[in-house]
Length: 292
Ligand SMILES: [Zn+2]
Image (tube, rainbow, N blue to C red; front, top):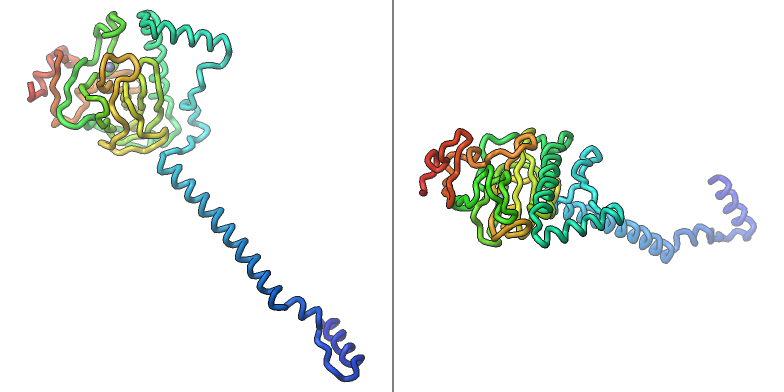
């Protein structure tokens, strides 16, 4: 600064007593230069606002979709694609072929695999937000109005396979496209397509209970999404091993299928087109149904 003043003083004396403006200083502060600098700053601020805005918008959209990236500990639900090699692909195609041809052995085998899958999917969520929700005492009905059971829980002759198999849930009458609701507050731990269950959603409710909604025509939730009781999660359909539109509603306690009917809120009105029995062997309709 002192040096600059000295230069100015020198210039003054050298110029014979006339003030000579410091042109370098003038250049630095000239109006076009100031405008240019201001425009540059404004551009940077605008670009930053746009970048931060788009990032926030993208993240809010992802959150709205429930597109939450699960933490690394939750790898149980990153189910790997079954086709890992050409050999496995051929095996998979053979299975598809057999199932398309309605081969009972292939279909039964597929259901066994799916049972193991759902056991894993409903139990391996030890480290996730699924555990933060409370375990419900009762379930609200997954469909509006009176529930009509078309196939109860327990052993039955499978309508397609034609052999006696355990039915792991209850089949509820539902026209195609009927809204399906979450039976309790919980977290979606898996959704996707299975050959037997068709399009299905798996929800976890606290530490022990899970629900599965099968044969859907539409899935309206994402894995990791927290859903309230009675919230619509999809639409009923007839995907998978199904003879017509209905909802397969399944409850698993620690991965093991249990009869969902006794777990429904006592006020839920249920009727059935077939006899339903309690775990004690009593006709279930006689215990609770008021709509026979
Ligand atoms: Zn079923």
